[in-house]
Image (cartoon, rainbow, N blue to C red):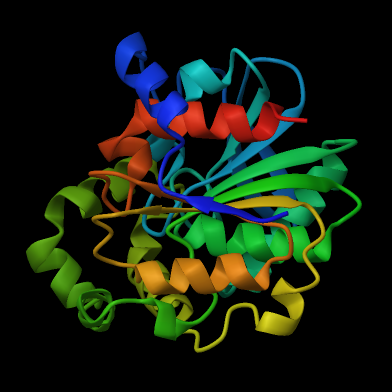
Length: 278
């Protein structure tokens, strides 16, 4: 039976009373590894033990976006946090698309010889997680996607307007902090302009995963939205929920597009409850 709601009151009261304080990981401090997929080196870090939990970050980001939630999640699961192609310390692929990233992570699951895996995907990572769940029902057992969209109509006008400005010249003049960080991490820092163009093209994909494929996702799934998400339409989150059979839907109060930074303690509690429930 499908479940929908804001936050179960018992969980919310428990969260508020527990006052959980999470430490943070330091990006690159845990003996990060490289794995070659289709002649592209992907950078990843591992933490904890137990069922494998693959963390897929959002666009223009890296593993560092999960720094506030990894410590607590690692007390329950074997965290595998990976920089997507062209992001962080991972090399660029020849092109970039959501299906390409899903194919890369599918191969990564096989190379690491994972029997089964849970997945948390944020934004672009959530879109990729939907494809991965569809493509690998033999391996992907549960997914939690946050701020995901299955097509371009799920993005707000403000989000579309921002994507349209995403050109190298704009990055140089308005995103200097991001550019400095990118160049400090990337093994191909001189190719950042190609990455920006590839990212923009991917973000403007008309259809990422159609409803017929969403209907075929067989694993246990949760769609999470922040009530203050400025990038993904709340109504689109509901559309995803309705098209994924047996899925759950959760709206986080006072939470932006990125709950892993704006409300990390709460999203961790939601995720652990979802992955651990029978």
